[in-house]
Image 1 (cartoon, rainbow, N blue to C red):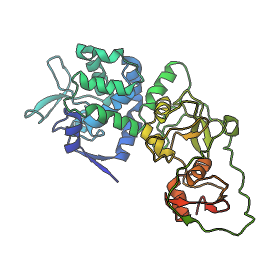
Image 2: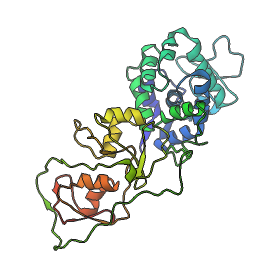
Image 3: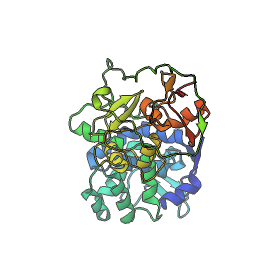
Image 4: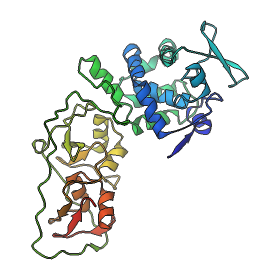
Length: 361
């Protein structure tokens, strides 16, 4: 599993984390941290109007996912020093100077509360509270611009972490909760994947594409030729699929092969859709097997907003005129590289009407 070495990378990323962060952590540790402290961050968002995503991202960086000495021995996740007005317990750690005084808390919530007070009571950060509370990108960049960190990459690092682990979805859930809408008790409780059971209808099952018909001619081998530009895309209308239960967008969400998608509107771009569903545009392109960085969805095209499945219950698809491998991957909600794998193909492979394409082993 990929390691994130805090002794080096946190110093580079934050420009404010020092020797009290001496730990290493994995992606699984990041997900565990989000699960463990999501509600604390959401409570602080409600109380102090600071995005939960920003607070969590900073906590992950500055506490090494809660594994730094300052975090484990002092419940201090933000490197907050004693200062003259601190009357509570303390912990001495070598930082910029030897044996510096840091605040020690009874619980992590105390550290989160002080972090929120720090931002809300200092005039230099007043600009933050003029921003849209759901615009985590603007919050990260304004934090950096207002002097929270000296490293030039600090804002980008926060944004990357938030988008990679979909942390901003907690901001939306917090706002929905404030509006009186029912949300899941544990949004990240499904193995680290955000869920919301408030609108799930267990009686609805995904619509499956029709079973492929058997070819009337003998099977043709798949011939590898120079790649051509795919011109046919898989489109749909909402009534063909059950409604999805994703709480992270005000756009209508549908489900195919247990995967959520939206239907592109006229003029949509991956960047616009990404903002609407709180997923990075680069992730949307990956989910939809889009290789051309200049490509954009067409009207009524299916755009998956999470990673597609590895297989489909329909084991075989019979190629029809004009279809491409990506078209088939989009139709069945199966990742394109698995279709390559099942059929010993690659991105340069050309298919013909009547060819059989395996959708699972």
